[in-house]
Image (tube, rainbow, N blue to C red):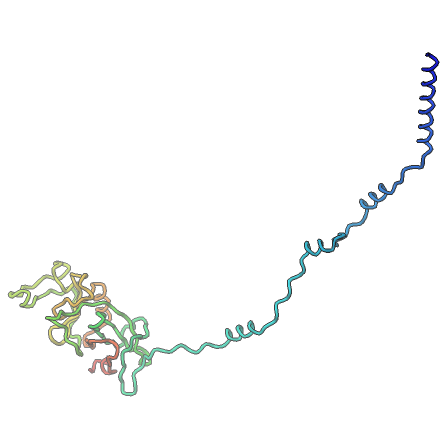
Length: 269
């Protein structure tokens, strides 16, 4: 029995020695994989994309967009922009050959020139009072416009040419008999707010008509007076500073189309 065990151990020992001998004498393992790895690691980089799949590269790198076709539209647009624009229509500001200036909807505006001739135009239709001035070169310009109130249907403001005969600051008011049969005078506006003339009055030469201020600013732009032309106290103060005794006032039913002679500006109407 013991001899059998010894024999088995000897056989096993011989097998182990034989296997070790074969392992030592085998050819070394090929180094292709290691060398390939080293070559990949040390390979110089390139900006080009390398791929075994050309289709994939084409998808990840889109081709440049095609150039837009060349047209002359841009050049035409620039040419149009560079074309000179026709001159704007000019508003007529001069008298015609007969010395008449016809009022139009649009009149050139300018600042007031003290000492140059003016004409006041009261337009009943639009409830505006216009101060026109003949300035250098016989040019007619608008220097001021103010809202007004005119006479009622029962006491209308008469149209026609007038002349300024008096200018008064802080005028007293003598009411007509239709308002006060005794015609008791009312003190100036700075002393009695019941005075309907307000801060100033510009008296005209006919029918008792005057341009004046008011104690009732809510009536402006209405047919509300006894025939005179009311303005806000601010506006009548402005008008008062622009006109002189002898200046012409034209009260008209409609501003556009009214004819103003050159003589009116010179106080010869």
